[in-house]
Amino acid sequence: MMKKNILKCSMGQILRTTVLMILMLCTFGVANGQHRKRPPFNPAKFEADLEQFITVNACLSPSQAASFFPVYRQMMKKMRSCFDEMRRYHFVNPADEKGCAEAIRRQDELDIEMKQLQQEYHNRFMYILPASKVLQVIKAEEKFHRQAFKRARQWHQNHSKHEKR
Image (cartoon, rainbow, N blue to C red; front, top):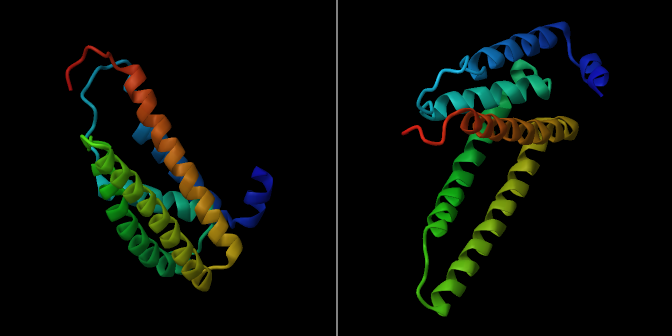
């Protein structure tokens, strides 16, 4: 499968992929056994890393990326508001059955709303990019998030549980 992706990408895209991988290794490398506080989350850096990862893995040209990412950011902004509301429900413990039922219904509504948003924007993406590129973008985004969670989990495993944060 890697050979197919390499054949689809130009030499410039392969070079960008190589440079990105080197940067990711430097950025996310293990700190030689040094114990330190968890690095603060930087949303702008996360977004830039995500967009670079998607661009490289979906082999987007600069013009494709320039037309795609403004619409993608718009979708993510709308999705983030749903995520934020869902996160608030995580900390809510209604005292009665009626309150619990309402929390469940609202979380279900938010799940449906997010899926409808994704569907709407995936259709918009297919006006900007070929469907094959949109599918590559979706897979690249999922892969990026899996890798980010894996790095976070590894960071926690490599640091003492008794260390103050």
